Image 1 (cartoon, rainbow, N blue to C red):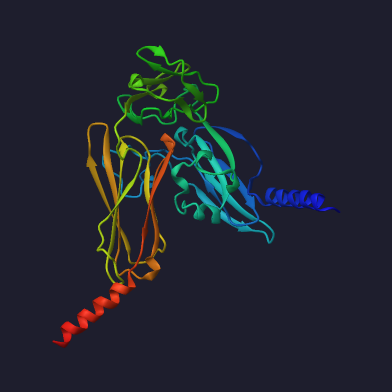
Image 2: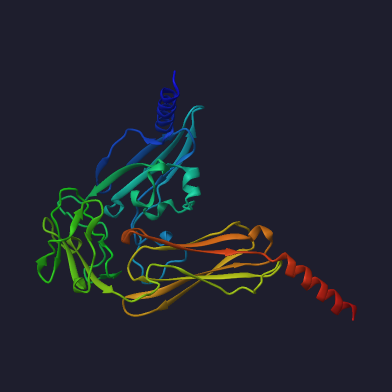
Length: 366
């Protein structure tokens, strides 16, 4: 066998092994249709520990990294029951959710637990992640679940009829209207000033997209389902297109620690981001080492009627050399298809510690 043939064979073997070891649903379905109040059951198997990514009512307080606020909608979703088994050859994860509701329409994924942790999603798989948040190399198996309202086609993100979602976007970017229908064949339309927005792109599993927005695109929009009736058949939006430079969707880190920082001192980092009201979002830290010395504070400041600044402060008391490294603050808003981060490198100064100890020794001598 020549070298070229060997290389092709080696590549095929690796592709086969990757395919054979990838987690997969049993049975494999690209789409599942259920009626409300049914029971959703999923099975996933893999060569390593596997777990689920799943959709839930976006008003649920357990989506957030802090306690629910009084003005949040009442959560209707129940956390699913997930159990794990191992038959000596393969790992099996079982997902069961009873009395499903239309707000649980969405993407359901199966992924190796280690990869979910490596991507920083450990313990956060319930926030409604989609294929947009993963690379193909992550080997996630996906299925889309439609939970139907009998004779009442509507939208998954369906707040009270008087509620208006705010969308902020910069000139030249794309904007996403996350009005997803609970049935695949619904007749959704995006309307502005009584006219259908002809240049919008519709995807049944994602909503509508406006490409390359300009100032003229600012205004009030309605996402309407012409098959249904009642409050769940329309969703209101206001789009504000701006050319101003701001922290909109882009987190910024401010270092409030002593400089230089030496072992034993307290590291304080504040991460802030401007975000619009009414959307599921997450602001999280990825740090070199978790420990009992790590704590967080949360702050929220209203900017105007449409947006606010959210801050998550990281505090590490009694820093050691193990706390040295890259600190990353990431903002994720699945409904808006936003995922931005900011990184800062922290160095622990041991040389200054020596100088500090010498000064302290001299003071004690006198």
